[in-house]
Image (cartoon, rainbow, N blue to C red; front, side, top):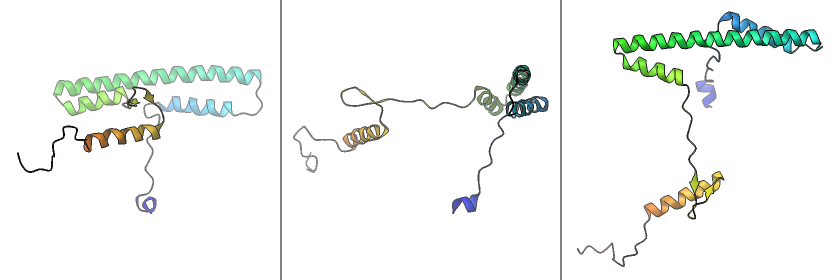
Length: 143
């Protein structure tokens, strides 16, 4: 039902910073790769084209990084901190999630997700439902 109402989410373009020439080289390389008769000449041509694609992508990446660095410097000069941090985030890439290990009561690392979830349940039930080892009645209203 929600798919009918909301539709699908548009995908981000993968190679936003690549030039049209590079994209054309990539398409040509793809067509050459999927040719059925693989001869020595075709293999050599593919290797040559692959080197050109890699070089072109490196150059496009460098131009993209230089352009973003210039935008970052201009935003910093003007004092626009929001743009500064957006550019830094864009250059540094996606933040990776840290994998935090869960250990059992003996100190051994738990790798199974179900066992980790059970261990978290044990941990929080112990925090939220503490045992009374002092012998004092906590429900007694007297001081």
